[in-house]
Image (cartoon, rainbow, N blue to C red):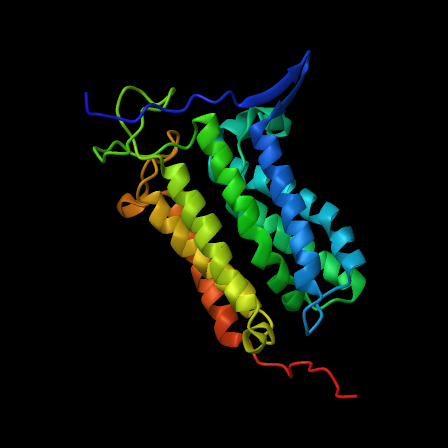
Length: 271
């Protein structure tokens, strides 16, 4: 057996009181939403203003619904359609896990469109500020995947390989940590730089496009180290489902950035 770093066996359940349990995965969602909400309140106020603080507060509920409903539906359609076709009621069993980022992203995009239309806000400008904080949730979500010992990497002999509890005796890439770094930290830093440059912030849709393209690239790279879902395996040309779903994101992101047109930057009027 190859040398491997012991997996830090952290209980996925933080606190359990009778039938009620607080899981790290749920806390990851809560942390991502709360921190993203607080930062977006500040980013939305940057000129040109995307929304008021109260409107950002109102959108939180829309975002949560978009993530949960879209993420679950995406998992059902993309990863286990045959199973849920035979037992469609099990799609409601959220406590069994199974969420798709691409489905959740689609749900949030739909929520942005409906919310902005109902409030008279600019969709692309609002989307720019929201996507700039989205990597916060991705970072915590990948850390929760690692704590749960799920979505592990492929077999490897690198010195930092780990043996995951439910993945057999072979040492594997801790791909959840790779993805937390690329999809969370690196993408967050990139978007914060972009959204804080007035000339780029004035280009409606540029930051959102950078998020879509950046996430797509990070996901495709991360999937090179991650073990494909057992029920799907490798698809066309050795690609994974995550890689295939990320290609349209890169194309859409590039199109948004190319189509972004500069707007006059609001400057303070001299007294």
